Amino acid sequence: MEDDPVRVETLRLRSVLLIAINEELDFRGLKQKEAAALLHITQPRASALKQGKVNVFRLDTLVDITHRLGLRVSMEVTA
Image (cartoon, rainbow, N blue to C red; front, side, top):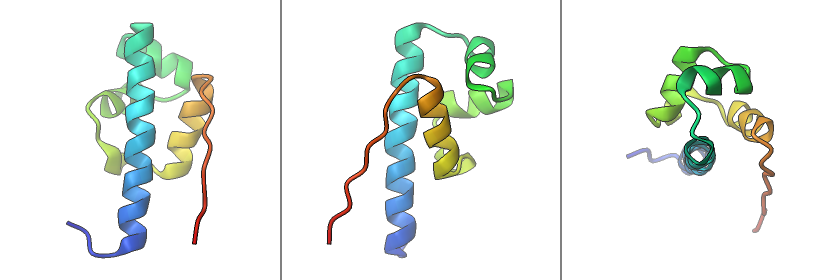
């Protein structure tokens, strides 16, 4: 497990987005090729999404993909 709290939090955020993306893709019943076209990514990247390969995607990329699905991303910052 990663010891750096910043990296841990970034991984957590990416995981949350990846789960939301996959739930929406499953709900829509999209095949990888269809998802790739909709999300403006390659089919291998769509495959990585479906396989849950969180380390393949940067946080900003997952936010972009989430928005392309019509989902809204919100964030809360606390001390």
